[in-house]
Length: 333
Image: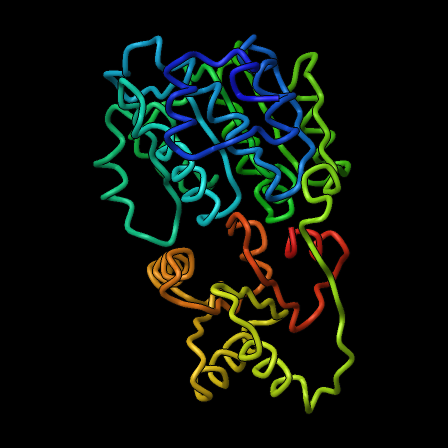
């Protein structure tokens, strides 16, 4: 199966090729044709499944045939749980957008940074990617209107609810129109997610992609039994024993993350920390350096498990195990 079989326009197919996408992932094969037909969609897919491109490509195609908005109303709203995911979605959109015949403006907005620069960039935005809190802030200042959106995407809906954004979501949904195309993506299903599905989706196409569908032999797992006293030295030895260009290390607490980074740096290993106590600027810089290869080791809490999407990441190390099997899947996926 190729992207040419999915109903995408020549302009999109050219952008896909120039962006070096070779073959579609399973979720893209199932989702793209349905979305191009204007159907609601429920995508049950873990991180790394290709879900972002699965909805961004049809959205770009739909927007290409329309004029860019001249007022505060945005046609497409993507709600995400974290700053990192907001930036990631915007990067995917821009990766295709730079090759399109008409530039479609996408903008990521999130908290933790000054609101004024974001307000100044809103004009002409066609794809608004937002965390719930910052979106409500901008709505309260009459800087953006979501009353006429044509497409609503809730990405990682389970994470949105797990992070306590239920009330914010209820507030946002009061302002969106009843007539719209709604897409919802979630890695897991629980009562709250099901309630949201029943409230928002109308006869949705259901697409479910298990981890085995897109990582058949790509992930090799192994475990080492070490004592607490030897865990640190063993980690350093493991990192130094291979030629991996990028290594993502997960720890369960901010304190452990900082301690591991300190000891790695002390032993000549270039490493940076990534966790919630870091400022947004520091986190953005750390992630950018890691993605570009300027920093070899990123030591992160589970905050990063769904916010980092790097194709063919060579090594993930669980320095400490997560609290649940679901978190483990998000880490290694």
